[in-house]
Image (cartoon, rainbow, N blue to C red):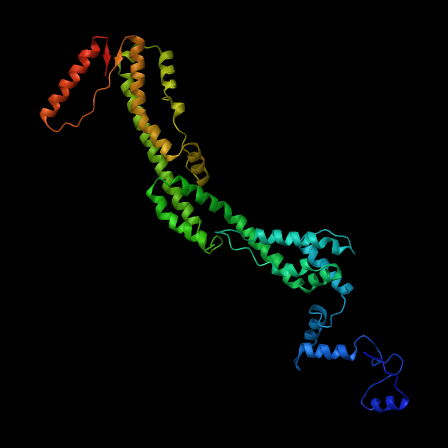
Amino acid sequence: MQVVNMNEEKINEISRFGFRFGKGSVHTARTMMLEDLQLLLSYVGSPNASKSDYLKAIEKDNCLGKRSGITTRQRIEIRKVLQKAGIQFKQGEELRSVPQFLFKMQELAEGAGGGGPKPACPDTSMLEEIRLSSGNEQLLALCNQKNELVQAIDDWNNLAERIEMRWPSWTDLKRLLDYAVETGKAEQIRTEVQQIEQQRFLLGEPDPIAPLVADLTDYLRKTLNDLDSEYVALFEEGMEQLRANPNWMKLEPGPCDRLLSAHKLTVAERPKIDVQSTEDVLKTLDAISLSMFSDRIAAIPERFETVKFAAAKLMVPKVQRVKLPSKTLKTEEDMNEWLQEVTLILKEKVKNGPVIV
């Protein structure tokens, strides 16, 4: 604004409108020139604007384009935001802590979301204004968004805590589903799991994950118990047949134990099945999957046959084990043909020594 020297007559003329020009008069103060006032009024635009509208235009929007100085009040507000984020700083050196603050806020945002089924990471565009500023402008940008930043810290921490609480249940569900993949049950639940993931419904209410975990746990628990019962039944049947075997009965306990141990037919070799909790079910399946358990069960009869042959070998070293041909017998004629075939095989084998079938 151009400074104009006014004579006494001019001063008296405009004094009629309420202007004062004495020492200390507000109309000689340079805190706001008329051009600035015009710019402010034009920026706000509304004749009904409140005091807070004008303060926002000056302090936050910097409509006058002034170089920023940080007031004591603003510095106090900045410190509150830094403390809320857990940032350590020395008074008067708040600016040095801004990069650490921005890193911490980005870290909080990433912890408040992620890939499905987590919610999407929150918008961090408000941090860009702070990141792209420097010096006091950076502190002022932080101060101008203090309310939004404080709210974001609370919201993002809350989201991160909720994700942390529910995430273990989600990982259990995925592991249970992987172990149930060989069964029809997996297909029934897989669609629901995919929906939770695609819709980012990890934090949905009511909890969509817990019922699926319970359902799969119950299913796998029953499946493991059924397999365990089948294993025990076949094992006991095999031991009963073994005890009645003439060659086995002639062996001393030592050789018997070694034969059973060599073919994994001891009580200690029985898979340990603990299915009380979801964690127990998963630990059991980590040790032996359903397919592995089924294979162990299917191998039991053959292993006992191998033990019988080994026992016979100890008693009659030249004994031969002969595997008879498999054939579907539908008629008496089929049976007679098979018997003739078997007879020929056994007659040929017995020439070389005793035979066990």
